[in-house]
Image (spheres, rainbow, N blue to C red):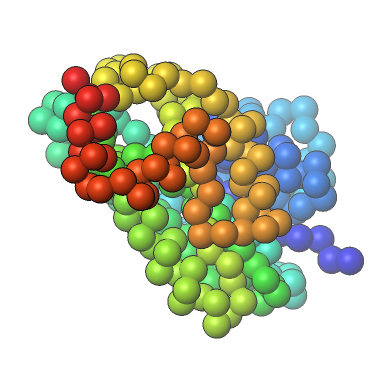
Length: 256
């Protein structure tokens, strides 16, 4: 049986690192890509480096994404089994208090980063029967969240891209899906200088390992969208059947 190959972006910390560690124990050959090679080396210090490949990658750089995919998969006949688009950034704050450069960077990393990796990985995904793309989305894709405006917009885009490619890439036997967590206790949230009223009302009750369990479900039995956590899963289902004005009222209440 050939070894399966998984490439994970944003793998130096948080959800990406936890996913890499789990899938390595499951026998995958794991490509761990991140903006900082030194951060990857520090994060994996003491790991058994067998089947782990550390890759420096700026997801906003399409040429670099192509090179990383070639370095990781180009010499194999089996292609890429799983692509996990985890890299993302968040800046909490009132829209006018976030710089234009930061708004642009959020869209570039969170949206173009996913597009770049999907395009760069497609030739290798095609080579592996029933390969899978897992995009990390967010509960902020259900409704635009005040004080997370550009982040929320970026995750709406990721959800739409997932839905489009889930249908479009069926012809290549590639499954495309996403994982939709609420706020997770990782450095991306805990290191924020500002807070959002929605976050304060809902709290942060889940960790990276909770997300990893759902990512694994998506790899083994994918469906277009899978939520993380029982409470948010219920809220997500309700938001899908509630009239728009009800969802708006709920968001206004949580943002008060």
